[in-house]
Image (tube, rainbow, N blue to C red; front, side, top):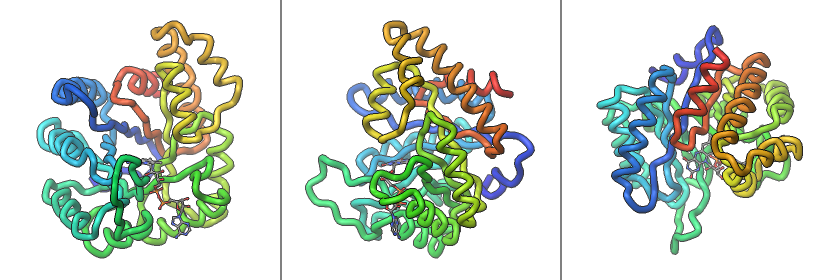
Length: 287
Ligand code: FAD
């Protein structure tokens, strides 16, 4: 099903899960485990499973392998991510053809960040806008884009970022998924500002049920996601118990997701970190 159909109306919340291709040693075993987790996720009948892509194509093969398996064997609706940074136009053309030949209809189109471990990085397309302009003209794919309720780190102001999102909509983006956030107030303000700027496509909040305090610290560090002291302390209390942290993470994310749906969000995009339990528990709690 295409994105425009998936998000056609707000009758029932649309849930999607994001997974990433495993890295490091024992990849085969890790991929096998991921498919077990995906089978659990599938029980919640997600509208989409999105599969991340390593900027510059570092994990292209594993990413494609997961996409193919999801599409052909598990029969799950899959949306590959794709980044254009450090990629030539020819590479992009080939990749997009490959995706379309698999029968994929939706893609999450991103610029990505230049990988630190790459010697030479030449990008034919300098931004997600240039990539989606290409997709619109040269493919049948429908595309989603990224949005940043707490501002993209490179943008001078949130308004500049919203302007870019508006342009993405004008170029044919069907839906936007947000960067992870923990403070709903920032999403509400962003959503209202987007409305004022003329953005009408669904903006789907991305939430991540926390499963470890260490992980929470890392996310805040890497993505620049804002987190209130109170939330930080809430999870810090459970620092020494994995089980209690998972429970607290589910409780926190359930409240967060419930409020977002009450606010009027079309659905929730779950950053699953390749684990089914927390995100599926959240869905059970709020439906
Ligand atoms: P862009 O939309 O191009 O924006 C990048 C910056 O440039 C922003 O500050 C924007 O405001 C500015 N900008 C863009 N165009 C213009 C313009 N015309 N004029 C002025 N300013 C402009 N990364 C991965 O490597 N792989 C993934 O799979 C992946 N998945 C993601 C999924 C989601 C839902 C999100 C939110 C992010 C994901 N990312 C992923 C991270 C993303 O690649 C980075 O955040 C990257 O820095 C920006 O990508 P973008 O598509 O938002 O870029």
